[in-house]
Length: 113
Length: 117
Image (cartoon, chains in turn green, cyan):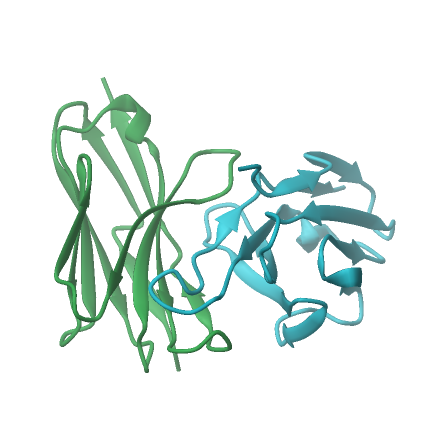
């Protein structure tokens, strides 16, 4: 069964600190993996996208890594800001347009002053 | 480029009533998705359209939910009759689906928050 799991479920960190969010998946065959940020009351917005051949992708203070062999990805946030408080969702896509796009349950991040 | 539009943004109804949501995708996007997102969870796909045809509706509760995408552009999602457990945010997303790296990259609307009392 194709699944995406994320950990931790929720996280509270101090402003300025770094953090890492985890994503494990079993989707196969695999096409690409995305990290989305969802602010409260808004739709998800794409942060990074990686194919199976990519190990890392950065977007400002956000760096995603991918290990296609172990089917694990992480999202590292550097020097966190209050505006980083949001839900971070890992999304894995199958090979074709008709394959499932599987969403993880998300990690809720709270950055406090 | 205009984003995905959804309306209404908020809706409060009593159980057993009916409700409809509207979505206008990004111009030129062939694929349209409706998701249900319960508080604290990731989005759950309800239905996926490719142009005006249904690709996947395996998780749509067909006894009460229906959706259509006439002319392959905008779409409506209806719930009739609503139950308390339908309280959630209903997200609409669209994607180009022309293959390559950007295949499946979905752009989401702001969602409609439904409260069933």
